[in-house]
Length: 110
Length: 115
Image (cartoon, rainbow over all chains, first blue to last red; front, side):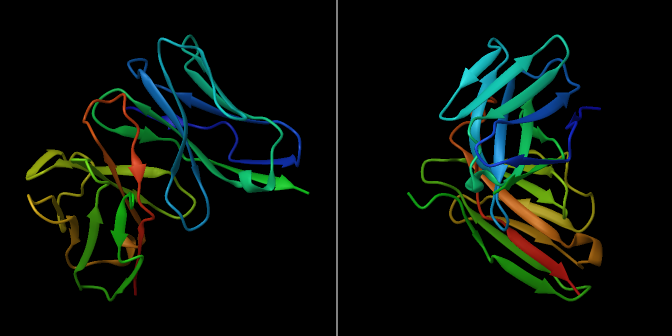
């Protein structure tokens, strides 16, 4: 069946460094992807999305890269800040709902 | 715009009781999705509803769980005869369209604890 997974369950980075969070997806029919950020005790918050007709999209301090050949998605956070500490989920959509990966916990070290 | 409102934030039920979780979508959103999240895990899709219609309930357990989204009022996720394994965070999301190129807006969730 469909599945979305992450290579790294936890990631620790120094404040000010760049962070890269990876995601693998298995459904080649997926054509829309979103990264969500979830802080402790809160619901997932939309960060950035990308459609399958693109391979890169940039936002404020964040960049999403999509490699359809190997079915890989990544989220890059520039100049990581303490407020970026959270769990990050990738989600793919090929039908009527999103399939979420298990998440990567990002810890920002002072 | 108050966003997606879920209540209660925390709910404690004894085994065998019923749990009712409420979700009011964002203003102008007519599509509601329920997800369940176990500790340290990702979100698992449960059900997708529009007003008065269940569109996709493929992620919903066949027994004890039901969902509705009436013409008036919030969407309700009902769990009958709760068991300890139902303890989880339940998130509701809404979107303005069922088209899959729209992201969801999530509520803050209801954390159900079954004792």
